[in-house]
Amino acid sequence: METFDRYLRTQDAFDAVLATVSPEQWDAASACEHWTVRDVTGHVIWGLEVLRQHASGRELTVENGPAGSAKPGELAGEDPLAAWRATRDATDAAVTGEMFDQPAPAWYVANRPDATVTDYLALLTFDTLVHTWDIGSALGVEVRMDPDVVAPSFSLARLIISRTPGTFGPRVKPPADADQQARFLAFLGRSA
Image (cartoon, rainbow, N blue to C red; front, side):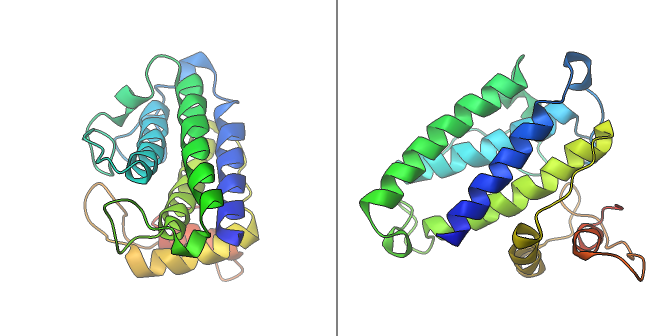
C-alpha cells in the first residue's frame, strides 16, 4: 500500500533527524513559532498516539499535543528520542496488525466511521514530513524530502490547511526556480 509505505519512510526520516539532536538542543527554538525541538517532537508523538488510540477504539484524552497547544514537549519527556521510538513502535504494531487482518481500504478507524486508516496515515505523513524539516532547519541539518512523499502531502495540504494562529502562517512567495519541496514549504508559510 503506497500510503503506508510513504508513512513508514517519513517516520524513518523523522527518526534520522531526531537521532542528530544533542541533549542541549532539545530545548532550542524550532521553526514552529513558540515551540522548541522537544515541543515539535511531543506534537508528533501525540499524532501517533491519536492514531493508536483510535485504532484501539479509544479516544485520546491528552490535550497538550495538538497544533497550537502550550506544552506538547511534556509528551516527549526527558528523553525525547526514546519516547518517540517507543510510541512509534507501539503505533506501528497496532496499525500493522489491523491493516493485515483486513484490507486497508475497508478498515475504518474504530468509532470514526468516516475515517479510514489511509486517511490517518496520509495526515500523519504530511505532519511528520513538515516537522522533520522544522526540526532539521532549526538545527542546521539539511532535510531533503522524498518527492514521492511531497506530492501527495502537498495535495493534502491544499485541502486541509487552516491559516490560524498556532497552525500555519501566510504563504511565502517561493523563488521562480523553486523545486517542489521549496514550493511546498512556502505554501505552508516556511522559507526554505
